[in-house]
Length: 270
Image (cartoon, rainbow, N blue to C red):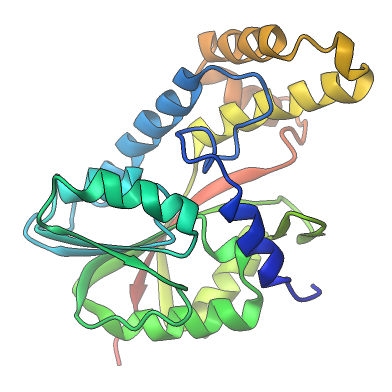
């Protein structure tokens, strides 16, 4: 993998729409706002289950928190949440969302230079590692591992590919890794993977996105009727959820191209 141009990553997220669709990268497909709300609520149920063992009076670190949808969710369950976001555009929305909560601390800054000042029961990385080179993934996780309290976990949610890691190096810079790539990185950092789970709500939206992209590539812009196509595609797939996300795999079809997985990590005993 060639190195990521972090300046381009910064520019991309500074230009992101601070809405439920923007940080989820669901803009430009004609989807309704309800698609973003559906995905977040469905993912929330997964995250609640995966973090059910975390103490309710615990402390949480949300790195790369975006507009704060996850931070707001965590602050309603746990005693104290620190949310760190580097994009000024997204951070402004995070601050607004955090205003009603005395137990939600916001930090505007680079996740790589942020220095944790306490121990955490839960560290959440919601789609952060794919925007980092391997050396920085390793550096970040090695910094975070000692900050876990006894019994604490790191919960990662990352977009993945089935075979052969893929790097995009245009205006949108990202590393899509395989499950084995991530497991190798985690082991290097002294972290044990206790659970891996495919993110089915993500798969549904990715199926819709890739179908709309095929439509966009087939027709000139003036004929795309994107809003109608986006709404129809989303609601059509949504009607078949969750079984429709499992159909390609059962048929041996590698669709959608991108997947997404949750990784539950714990620090190895010294």
